[in-house]
Image 1: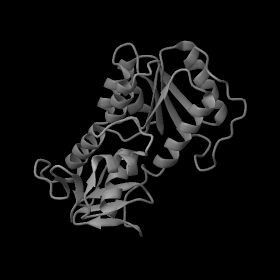
Image 2 (image 1 turned 180 degrees about the horizontal axis):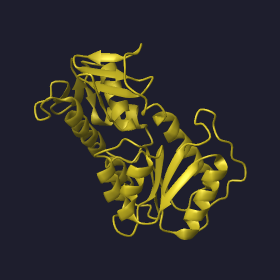
Image 3 (image 1 turned 180 degrees about the vertical axis):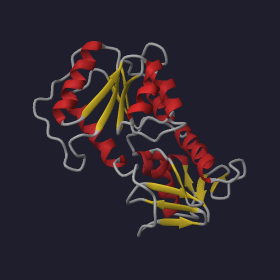
Image 4 (image 1 turned 90 degrees about the horizontal axis):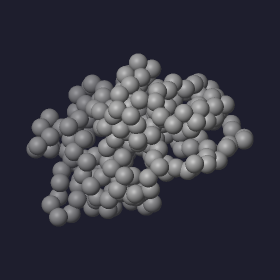
Amino acid sequence: MVIGYCREVTAGSILGQMAKIALIEDDRTLSDLLRYNLNREGFSVVATADGNLALELIRREKPDAVVMDVMLPGMDGFEVTRALRRESPVPVLMLTARSDEIDKVLGLELGADDYLTKPFSMRELLARVKVMLRRGETAKREPGPAEGSIRSGEIELDPARHVLLVSGAAVEATPKEFDLLQFLMNNRGQVFSREGLLDRVWGYDFPGDSRTVDVHVRWLRQKIEADPSRPKHLQTVRGVGYKFEG
């Protein structure tokens, strides 16, 4: 496997010099190369080669982003992502040697924020890590009143600081959950098809299908609805799609 080497790397000022990356990769050569380039870019790196140790590492180190291979000893990357999404919105970039679209879709539906197929250029990986960090850089700030917040009953969304409050309590949301909720709240009362939401929230080149929208709506309902089985806000319009009411 040949990975393109990035000779010129410049850390974006928006990211700061010491954003922490958790690297979960069992290929020693690739892990060393990734660590070297991430360090050279100005990031600090914590790493493990074992899927079973990945969650422990992430919980302990509280990284700003995770770069993780799919094929790992112990828990694979899919299992780690599934478990991680129950407790943290930290951005996840998944790496795989397989190009099957179903693997990409599964990883993204489980909550990964981006996906790279090996071999890839180091420049592209660094660019994608920066994008994830830019989007999630304010997620850890303490919640509180802010101008420009979007409110609906007990739900308050603060796009500027990437904070979601439900009945005054902070609720962790993944970047895509946040984007989806923000889009629907900004267009409350309007019905959008699953395909329309994929295009507007995930982008026209997203490799997934409508199941991705269903999964994220289900996760959001568990976080914002008093009774997820009878949603007050995130409503299904049978045969059409979804809308936000309130």
